[in-house]
Image (cartoon, one colour):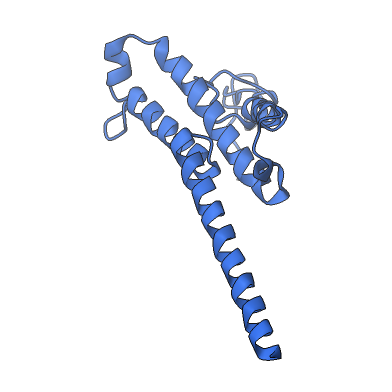
Amino acid sequence: MAGRKHKRGREGWTGYKPPEPFAPGNSVAVKHGAYVDAVVVPQAVEMAEELLTPAGTPDYLREPMFGPAVRRWAVAEIRAARAGEWVDQMGMEEAMTPPKPGTAPPIETVRKMEAHAGNQADKLGLTPVSHAKLIGNVAGAQVDIARLIMAETEGMDAGEN
């Protein structure tokens, strides 16, 4: 099927020119950048490294199995901080008003992000209460292992007589 003729005589020309696609790295629609991995991940890596470098950092956090959890915590902290800075620049009414019907207001979104970051910190023992619980659980497990070893050695000694 042939296109209709335009005044200028070109077949198929309708006068519409599609917009140019956005160039890579375009940030026109970015509001706070909390979900832009190119921004968040480098900051999270830096935050995780800062956590693990001081001499007082618990040794268990440096173990490879804790690496993914430390990275998740750092990403959650950076996202919450970026979104929090964005909401801080708003007026109170704007922060409390949902952008669209059926969505959460920005201040509630930030609260959820901060709660998630706090949960991640608790899982790692980075808050005082969670650290005390974690240390207590580890110490309790060590005592139980010591008791098992003592019971085993006493059983071996009794069996040898």
